[in-house]
Length: 338
Image (cartoon, rainbow, N blue to C red; front, side):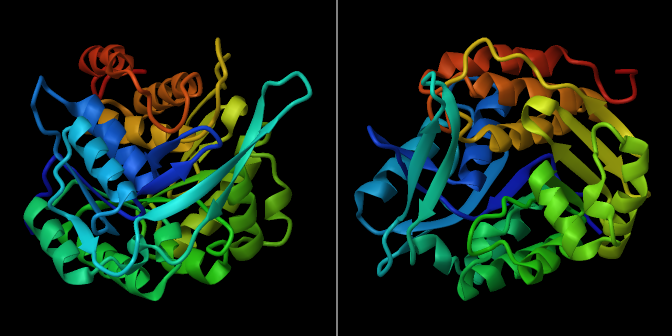
């Protein structure tokens, strides 16, 4: 079996996030791809080893916005399919604020159908075969429709055969938060990233009685058997748990706690849109850069916290990425103590 390259292939939604005052390109796989493009860039005009497989409308403003963003982050457009029938996807973002005016979260209304519901398998599989990446990234939202769902399952199965590490960012949203879809996705994953609410739900669906009541931060050792049960059921190699301001943890296939870290104080909070995607992007970038897992997770936590000080899922100023690229170059390599 050929050894996968040091590259990432991501599949799923590329869309337009509609805030009350502006529209920006978004979608979890697209957010992760763009951060990877910025973090792994080696110089002006360089192209990062990152491939996004998605689908956008033909000739509409949303598709033009997505293509422009791909170009900004040095990402190829070859694997982004064009749909002549369906429009580029749209998501209306509703923000909540506390009494003092500070951000208090957000909710989404995902418009359907959209072009990314119709990702075709054949060109997507061709892109996977050509790149033969080290990491294959996917989620559940783009599997909401039959066509894209079947294509993503076929890609994940082929990624298994190529020896890629299949990274599932569960990203449960209304309409795809079902045990059936979660089970089908978990069965195709090697690494699983979830937040604490998603883990609680998975333990209710697939764990043992009482597992969901365990506290993963305060009772990490008690949680280990519950995590082990979930991971062994689906053959997972690692589980990465993000808990927002409470920090993060990572578990091995046997439920052992591999690493954990605290939340970070935010000097400025603008919004949390894309924070989980930022965590995934830096984790993958650090792993591709040869960092140890514990150090990769700490970098991911810091990068996600920094993004919360920016408006929307991606910073407008490319200078944001410069110190993080430098950190990746100088951070502790794999094999050294973290």
